[in-house]
Structures are given as C-alpha cells and as structure tokens.
Image (cartoon, rainbow, N blue to C red; front, side):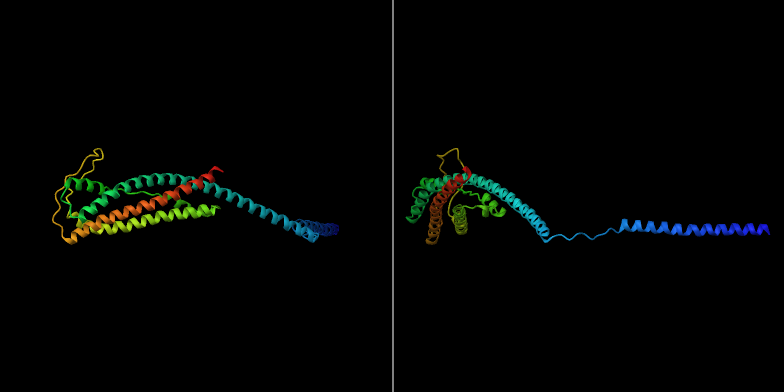
Length: 278
C-alpha cells in the first residue's frame, strides 16, 4: 500500500515537472521567433523625402552624366584634331613628291612635242625616206616612254578615315577637291587617248623598222639605224599622221593640265604650311 502511494507520488511529481517545463519552453520559442522576425524582416518604412531632395539628386546625376559626356566629346575632338594634323603633314609630303613629278613631266613633254610636230610635217610632205638619219633621230625622241606618277594615297586616307570633314577651313577643303579633280581629269584623259592611239599602233608597227631601237641612256648621241619606209598608201599615210598627231595633241594638253596642277599644288602647300605653323 505504501509502495503504491510512493509510485503514485513520484508519477505526480514527474507530471507536474513536465507541466512546468512546457510553458517555459513555449515562452523561449516565442522569444526566439520574435528575435528571428526582427532580424530577417526589418522595418522598411522610411521617412518620406522632401521634393527638393529628389530634385537635387536628379540634378547631381544629370550634371555628372553631362560633364562626362562633354569630357569625352572634348577628348575625341582633340584626338581628331591631332589625327587631322598628321593627315595634313602626310598630304604635304605627297604634294612635294607630286610637284617633283610635275616638273619632270613638264620638261619631258615640252621636249618631245617639237619632235612630234616635225614627224607629222615629214609624213604630210612625204619626205620620210629623204633623210633616214633625221627620221631615226626623231623617232628615237618621240618613242620615248614616260609615265607620270601622281600620288593620291594621302588624300584617299583622309577621305576614308573622315579626316577631311574635320577641316574647318572650307577654302582648304575646296582647294583640295579642285586639286584632286584636276589629277583625276588628267588620268582619265590620258587613259582615253592611250586606248585610242593603241588601236592604231599595230598598223604603225607594220610600217616602221625598229630593229636597231634600244635603250642607251649612257649614249645620248646614239641614233638608231632604220630601213626606208615602204611606199605608203593614202590610208597608211593618214593613219601614220593621225597616230603622231594624237601623240602631239596629248602631250600638249598634258603640259597645260600640269601647269594647272602645279599652280594648285603651290596654293595648297601655302595654305597647309600656314595651318601646320600655328
């Protein structure tokens, strides 16, 4: 009896102890949950800003972006100016080289034109076989091959890179365009004349004896020996006169165009030197 009472007392004691622990654990869990909620879910409600603060922030951001844009534009502008100056220096050297080529071509063409005029006169007067030594000397001179090399690489580089549009000097831009136009006219004209003369060349070669023609730059007194011309028909004579007259007209026109290009070249050189010297 006493043992059962003891057992019942112990069970009651254990039960009471368990009941006392349950509220304590629930209370701890509630506090823990509240702490976790405070940590993970902060209060996102802020004090509302005044309208002036928003305006000021917008103005500061706008000012920073605008200043950055202007700074980049100024940097690009100075880079373009530097590149344009380099293009002008390259173009200046090209003008110098072309001026040298113009002077040589002008000298050569002016020396050939009188000989071409004499050849045309000889064939027109039917005297081609009267003095073969004279004909050899004239043919040696008029058959001299000379190609005028005019460079436009620097100009093309300025156009392709956009450097030409950065030239604020409109007079310089117009002068460059005029100069390049003159070069293109010169090249186009000579290409057309060469094609026209080239069509007659095979027939001319059938009439002329060139067995002794060769390059002898070291011997300016060399005169090639030629055989007499065959008896020319009226058509062959006219074709021969046409051939040499076209050569004469071509070189005479080239001399005039070269004079214009030299004038434009000198004008451009003066303008570019004034820009580069500043």
